[in-house]
Image 1 (cartoon, helix red, strand yellow):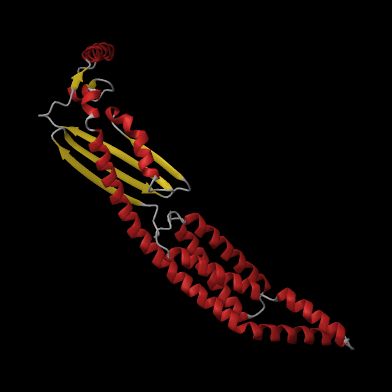
Image 2 (cartoon, helix red, strand yellow; image 1 turned 90 degrees about the horizontal axis):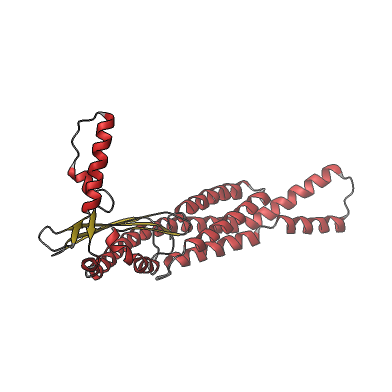
Length: 290
């Protein structure tokens, strides 16, 4: 199965202790980059959550944010750091006096100040299983989105690979004609500049020229790489295949460039040009694949 590196999932879970909400965003990245944002009370879970992510994701930048809204009726273990609150008020009075400001301080701004609200670690520990379970649900939802988009990407690439293989067969079909035309052109040029042609030397030169300009190996390798590309996209449970696909795309591009450099036939040239366009389009799509 092909997975996209991009996706979004949002899962909320309600309990007597309040509401937990996970938001997961995944975007393209060359390697696996994890950013997990947790309230201070749940920092102890970060290592376990990272391990859970690594079981499913292999490439991409994942940003996971946990929002916790404690229940007003439950004993959430919330306490105020009264000393810090008084200190903030005194600091405000000093600043207001020096600046001449008469604006009233907003109590909610005080509550949002770091370490003003203290939550009991013991009360939060009991919520750890709920946090992990809701994270697992969010991760499963994200993977479902990535799989759906990955299938769409795979179908796009499979269509381009089918067209690429058709072009390879078109080139293969005209290769005998290409060799005959190259031979005729070489003989005509030699006869135009040389009065007497040594037949044995001419045959040797023709054989050397034919070997140098033969593109059958490039055509065979193009077909093999495209078939392997197709096989990877059609396999199930393949995990991260983006890097392998990228390697195959580079090889396809290299063979197409060699074929273009050797070619002297207009029909082959038109096919190679379309091949290179398709390969570039494949390489663009691969950047979205895990």
